Length: 244
Image 1: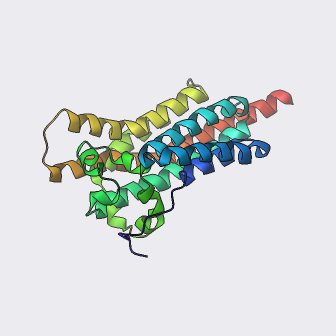
Image 2: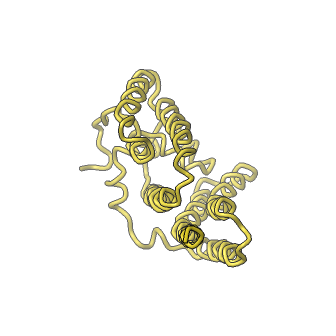
């Protein structure tokens, strides 16, 4: 299938959002809630697909948080979340990196994507139906060279070293460790957006800055997830010993 096919994709809610809801919601409620959300999504998509996607993600996050409050007390559930969510983010981030490397026609994503990309906001591709419709085709174009970047590796090394020190000190709670780890993972990308916003760059200079930020995210997701997994296992062991 051609990456730049003129055929319009079917208008559907973001598949990733549906997957998140399917994992987090009680099985007896999944079909009903997804049906209501999809009905409203279809109405909004008639006016703007981009805004419909943004609305759907907002509803996904709000709905998920309601049920997360009931589930987060379970170490087992936290362990599954700590595995699946970083895994999903890792794959999506890899897709964005490939997109940044191969994109010749920004209008393929959306009419405003070029302007958004010049602001460093490559994450706005996540609100495009065209991106999701062609996601696996984009990812299939990946090459090892797209994921190797010395500056990003160096930044990630120091961030992970800080996480390991925080973990070994045994003073941070699970929540504090998770917030610190994922904040360190996202900070380089957020910094790249702010750096571009406050300086004047030519278009060809923006790509490497964005790449540095998003590659740092890619590099840090697996080790952060692993460190939090170790903390969860420690809590599970302590809980078992307390019960004994």
